[in-house]
Length: 432
Image 1 (cartoon, rainbow, N blue to C red):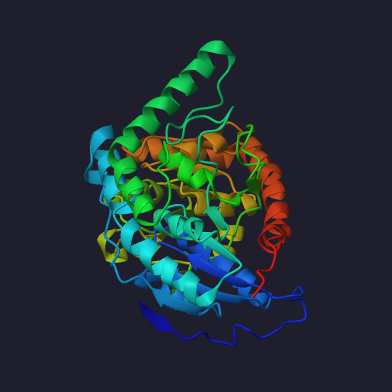
Image 2: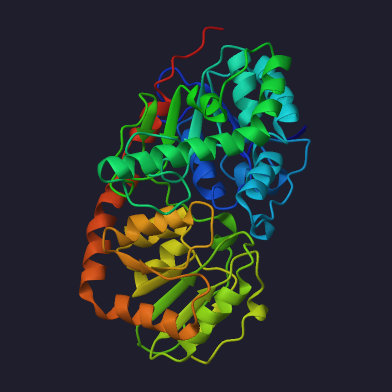
């Protein structure tokens, strides 16, 4: 694996460093919107004066290096998961298993194991897709923590099944619905992932697990990087902790060249996916809707789409990106695909949302917004006229802004809480 030196002495002490400082090994994968919050965790730990080494995809290397951590890149290059091309649940499950879950697990386990043997970390911290890293830690009796930069996604009593965009179940029929959907979902993903996962476990001297979720459930802590006020209430396992959202912007947004449309009309900010989800046509319909409204529009395309691909009227500016911390406080309405990072930052700024969810966890985020009255959701295939009506509804009804502000206050409090570091620093220092 390639190694990059840290930007500063990872063993140095800061005034806030607990005694003794610890060694943390992070094993991270690039899943698009998960990168800013996970790298934000790295930065917070490094700033406390701990030694931090990060195994990561090459696409993340410069961003991680800027935190002061030492970076080592995986030797197996990451592959694009073209989930928008997969039409059936079986194809989705097979593709996720191959590209996100177990395809990289053998090499990941070997490289993480070698790093553990060399560095003797006190704790391994992994992305949700870092199954090989979890296996390596478990095989060496080193605790590992699992980062979950979204709502709680594993099966839990009272939590609607992941990905379906459902509200919490009500009554026996609702609970039966959830139980059945959870069983079907687990069986589908296990069909394509469990055999390969257990082959990696066997190669590292571990017994087989009965489900993929069992591997993730073995974490010392499941660190849920969102606000409990945003998620639905449920009975989570004893090792799960809500530790607040990470509101950091991605590094590519900090270098953005952006401007606001002139005038003083209401500002609508459009923030879509940082990875490609076949969303160019949707982005164009949103832009066209803004062009026919008495508003100013700021459309950010993200790194996956060129601003030149989106023609716009004079009252709409289309840019590659703009830092959310700067632009969201200026907005009256935020239009988004529903990724957790954009949704949670818009709410933290007290801004109501119009959501056109595309897939992944986005329908789940949308229903958490709409059920609290903090925005509306329309289909990603909605016409420009329908999108315009949704924006007008949210803009003109003060109840949406009030609900977003109330929810945003709780999110902001949790984002500034110390729970994340308290949990990570709660691991005992390893005797050496």
